[in-house]
Image 1 (cartoon, rainbow, N blue to C red):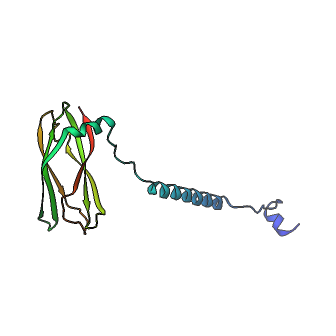
Image 2: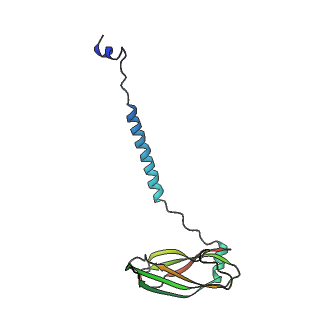
Length: 162
């Protein structure tokens, strides 16, 4: 009887893949698939804010922006703050719970540098009744370099009725 058979109790040891190696390979494969999925999901564009409904689009003619002015000042942290102020008037017959506008900043060549959606009427600020005029103030501290220094284009982006 050979020495190896005596040590193993008469049985020959099978040479196979160790369970630890199988576990490591499975964890690596699952990690790779998870990384691929998360990487792919992060590159997908985020869902955009809701668009104007046909009803809201028709109502935009009943909203008037007036007294729009722009001023800039430096904050205590030596940061430039640009403020857009103005009034919004509801000339229609419906009470508004939310009005959001897109503020679009351009460079000197007409290229969009920043598009930011901000509320000028909200539940927190108070609704806008028919015939009512409400003042708004929009501070911006993140306008990119190269801005043409003109008042941004203000476009109504969302209206929600009460």
